[in-house]
Amino acid sequence: MLRLKNNPTDNFFLLAGPCVIEGEDMAMRIAEHIVKITESLQIPYVFKGSYRKANRSRLDSFTGIGDEKALKILKKIHNTFGIPTVTDIHEPDEAEMAAEYVDIIQIPAFLCRQTDLLIAAAKTGKTINIKKGQFLSPIAMRFAAEKVIEAGNKDVMLTERGTTFGYQDLVVDFRGVPEMQAFGYPVIVDATHSLQQPNQVEGVTGGMPQLIETIAKAAIAVGADGLFIETHENPAVAKSDGANMLRLDLLEGLLTKLVRIREAVR
Image 1 (cartoon, rainbow, N blue to C red):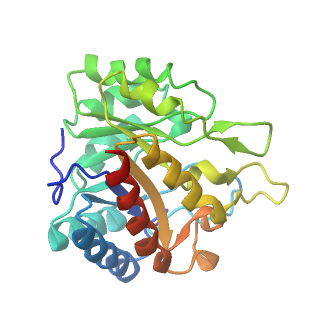
Image 2 (image 1 turned 90 degrees about the vertical axis):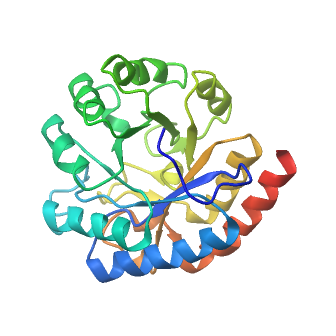
């Protein structure tokens, strides 16, 4: 399993960053800010950023600044701050390309059953983070993980990100955290995508960012191994998923509370 820095006290780990890489300066500022916070709180940290957004509601939605350009920014963050990075892939032929630049390859929730994608990711030898499909039970994620394992890669993490509840809402069933942990893999809770409100009539996904703290607190209280939080300096102008991202200046206060919860339940 990927070794993470700054974890002498069995703390939860954090995957955090912008939804998509919008530019080098923005990504470096966010990474530097979170590194300072997580080092102070002794939280192992992985920088998150999508190099391309393939799943968009509308054709005119922002998808990225260019694959290679964005991936090089992720590599620069790794080299500059000495932290792992994670990005998602969408097609099997992207796996090898992404693996040259990042430490963790993420499988998007909508694609978690795609056998060829999982096998291609597994064969890179990187840690694989599989997001639970909005349409799947936690128990069903065992089969997604087994595809990676059977392809020769034992470095698997699973991420809870909510379950479809009607047409335009998601709900988090926290029973899924211990259920997926029983498979023997680290389990992460995505505290931001879990609050999406998809399929809005205007074609832009909505969200409830005011409840990010609630979801994050509950996740740590039930024993999640890690948290996934998308964050941006100004979500109102973010090029993707601004409706459910945490404002960057709120992150330190939230993480401070979560560390205390972790200490209380450990």
